[in-house]
Length: 172
Image (cartoon, rainbow, N blue to C red; front, top):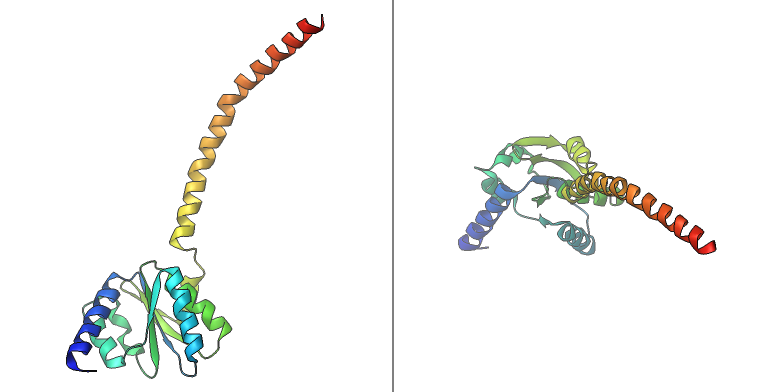
């Protein structure tokens, strides 16, 4: 990598860390290329990104961001997973680590809060932003449905009574 490529990588990572809702740092020693591609595709589907960068460049990219407190985690073979949704990156990384013992979560950050490995795993158990939105819409829609049922119930009862009188008159 020449200086221009390194500068581009650092600038891109700095922007990504600045916009990220959460960042996860993990060791990946022993993971095959196929497994790494699988992790990347799962992360992409969840709206996140997985990058392997030199520790020195990642530390430079973290400077000046809210996640700067996790610089000490960059030792050895590390990868960085990040996403705008604060739950997506920890969830995908934790799920992948459960099935693959060679991926070891070191910690991460959510905004300016640094997290240890247990904090990342706890964050992974929370519902995602889309799940929370769906629950909220469901909670808002339920009372509206009930109100519509209550308002329509008297009209339905009146229609049934009139229908019963009409059948009674036809029978007579």
